[in-house]
Length: 375
Ligand code: FRU
Image (cartoon, rainbow, N blue to C red; front, side, top):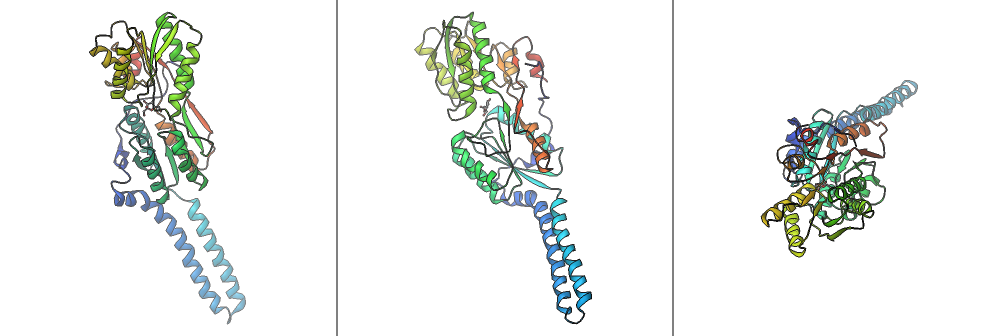
C-alpha cells in the first residue's frame, strides 16, 4: 500500500451553491440546472424547425419555378439537418444528478466536498444534488426525480445494493451513463464503478488485528449496514485473514449501520456480555469511535485495541483519532469524489473510461498518521 495517495484536502468550494436538495428548491434547480441545457437543445431544434418552415415556403413557390425551388429546398434541408446535428455536437453544458445515500455521515461530507470542488473546475458541468438520508425508497425517488429532469449523467452512491439496482438499471437502460460510487449495485447496468477494494481492506485489518493481538484474543466486530456491499466485503476479508489464527475468536458481531451512536450502543452491549474483549474492529471509523466512547465510559478502554476504516483528515477525522491513540489503526477509504467528476467529464466528452476504477487504500497507524491528518 502506498504511503500517501490522492490529495485528500477538502478545498473551498465555489460550486457549493449547487449542493441543494433537489426537492428543496425546484424552481432554482430548474433555472440553474436545466436552463442552459434546455436552451442549447431548444435553439438547435428551433433552428432546424425555422429552416424547415422556410423550406416549406420555398416548396410552395416551387410550382412556379421548379428547378430553382428544388435546389433551394435541398440546400435548406441540408442546413436544417446540419443545424440539428451541430446543435447536439456543440453542446457545452451538461447536467449531472448526484444521488448521495446519507450526507449525515462524515465520510460522505468529505466525498461531497471533493466532488463539488472538482466540479467547480468544470464550467460545462452542473451538479444537482440529493441526499437520501439512509433511506432506500427516498434514494429511488431522488433518482426518479433526476430522470424526470432529463439529467445527462447519473452519479450514485447507493445506500444498499438490492433496493437500488432496479432504478439504476432503468437510468442506464434509458441511455443515461451511470457512475456508481463506493457501494456496488447488483448486476452490471452501469458505466463505471469507482471504489477501493473492501475485501483487501478487510484482510489488511485482519492481519493488523492478528499482529496487535500476537495471534490470540477475543474480538468484537461492528458491522455496517447489512445490504451495503462494503460491510459484507470488509467482514469476509477480515475473517479470511483471521482464519490463519485459531486462537483469535470473534465473540460478537452486531450490526451498527455505519453509525457512531449505534456503534457505541452495540459495543457497550458486547462489552457487558463478554468479560474479556481484546480488540474491536469497526467497519468504519464512526462505529470504531463509538466503541472507544463506550469502552472509556465503562472503564474498559485500557488494553483494548480498536481498529476502524475511513481515515478522514482533519481534527475530527479517523487519522487524528489514531494520532491521539483513541484508535490503534484505521485504513484509508478514498472518497471517490474527484475521480467521479473526472470520469463524468470524460464520459460526456465521449472518451473511453474504465469499467472499474480501483482506488488505493493505505494503513494508518501512529507512525504515519500525521500525513493523513493534514494531507
Ligand atoms: C459512510 C460510510 C463510510 C464507509 C462507507 C462504506 O456512509 O459508512 O464510513 O467507509 O460508507 O460504503
